[in-house]
Image 1 (cartoon, rainbow, N blue to C red):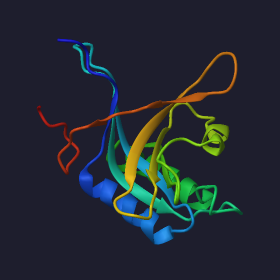
Image 2: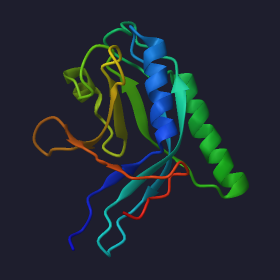
Image 3: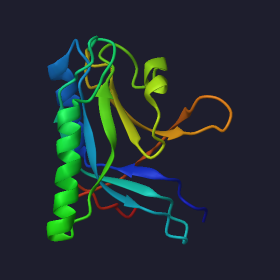
Length: 170
């Protein structure tokens, strides 16, 4: 039996919430933040996992919101403070895993604009699109730094999950 690849664990209700936010923002791009836990590879064949426990919607502050996104910095900073305070007060360790955004009329694939913004290889990118014409696709991506040249993206598969985010035994 081979090692399982890295994957994103996210419950169906969170994917549904992101898709609903994308439809509500149409024709503009929606965006928000992914919060959860990083579960490193276990050495026994299970690859790294990013477990999303909640999504935090944010206003799109880009001056051209129909073609680009910029997560509201006030929301972003407030979330980072909240995570730090919860860790200090409760020992709860949740981290910022990444962000999500929509491509209102394009495929749920990284765009040239996304690539230009891919400056943090620790963040996961979830893309929702196209928004019109039925249920949009929801895809996940990791930034792959390259020593020579710009970063790229690599698809990050979804792991089967319960609504609580635990991995189902397949």
